[in-house]
Image (tube, rainbow, N blue to C red; front, side, top):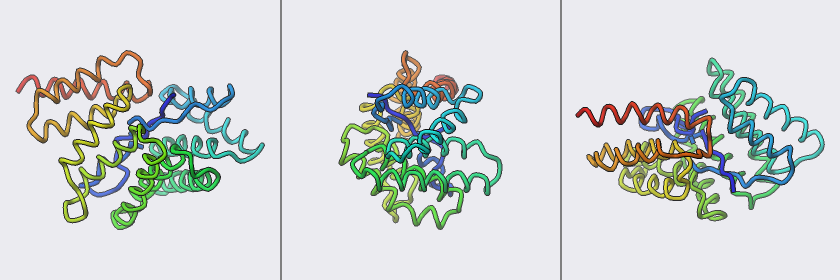
Length: 259
């Protein structure tokens, strides 16, 4: 079973505001948010393009292939796949208006995906991610308004698939960044991060969030081990994200070991 993360950078903020600056990304960071690979070579190729979206033209090719497939008929897994790719495209856009346009398109696709198959955990996961990205781009008040529906989508994801690591990652980011009066809880967030790594050990962005949480709680040795575990991943589930995460891990290790 192949899982797709959220978030470009899932661990980039899905909700705006300083205290929500790292929510989902993903995210759209993603994080063990993983689709079961659909049958058929075309879908496999779309997933390959997505997971290698750091290569020139791959992201746009994945969207173009999905556009063509959807012309032949609606399907829940096609909509959430296109939602996923459009979120990443939005992250690369310049300017608020362009980002909003893509995040809104992504949100509409994932709404259709959920309506077509409300038993698909990937549909719920990416719907939550798309709402978060849209809220981030719109501004703080919109982002705060979306906390409950995003949490509901992550809970729906886990009800359908208790081993969906990406949903734990997103819930962890929410608990970490939201202020206490609104339901935030950093200790509970740490537990969610640990669960995300346990369930999705091949998703590198989960390790960065967990290591940062360990540093916050003055667990330096655990943070160092977590970052080394990230660098030891030999077959990353998301190669595009692993490049950035491994570079971040090396920087963090350098800072931690010189202190």
